[in-house]
Length: 77
Image (cartoon, rainbow, N blue to C red; front, side, top):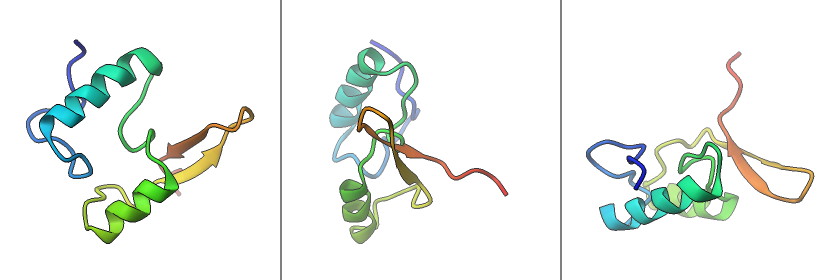
């Protein structure tokens, strides 16, 4: 299994270490490069912000040509 992106504690948007580990294993096979924030959705981000569990509220979402929605960190100014 791939090493988790977060060492130690899992990201606050996951309910458990097991849930995060399961996501990380799936992401290893599904994406070339992925992190929880880039794999997020606008709905889930809003839900996590409401629950004060979003660690990267600056994530913005783009729709790729095929319709896939991906989270992106904003470009530095």
